Amino acid sequence: MASKDQDRVQTPEQIAKANRQRVAAADGALAMVEVAKNDIAIRKNMARLRELRLAKEAEAPDPEAIANAKPKKAKAAKRPKSL
Image 1 (spheres, one colour):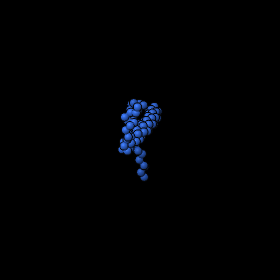
Image 2: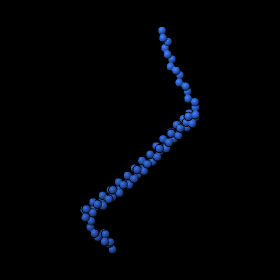
Image 3: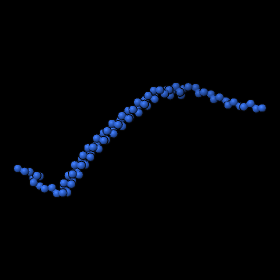
Image 4: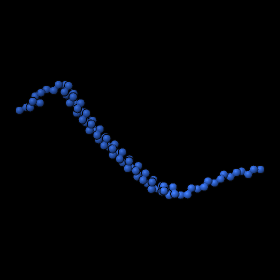
């Protein structure tokens, strides 16, 4: 026996709506894949930048040692000899 859905004829508007929904679903799936790829790229870049920052901080002198160091005295400017 045939079901009621198979016996019913679709109008052109219904067919167009079904096609739009199918296309929208496919576009949505592609968009989600693209977003996932962008997320991965962003996380990789963040990890790379974090490594660079940590390496730079490891090379930098200790800020407490700089703060506790005695300041150097400024030398007086030499005056030219007058004639």
